[in-house]
Length: 79
Image 1 (spheres, rainbow, N blue to C red):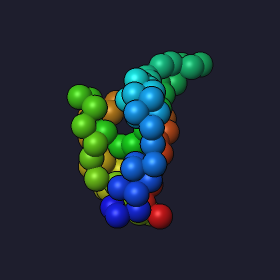
Image 2: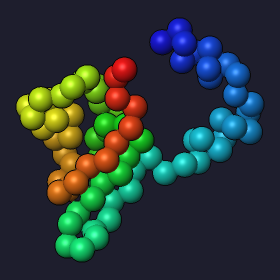
Image 3: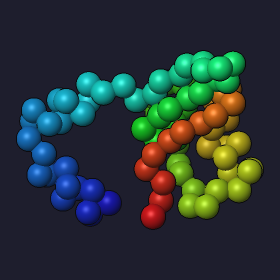
């Protein structure tokens, strides 16, 4: 978290405003497959849920409990 706070302190107000304006999640259908692309694992209301490094199937079902897509693409995994 200390590193994240340092990174955030380097951002200009304009950069922060731009980042806040970005869509956090996009759901769409392509060739009959439902796909969700999101900034991080989050619930339907846009609240972040905890990520797990090298998640098991059970972890993924918990992390994305309310995402009903065939394919989920997300970022910000734990290093």
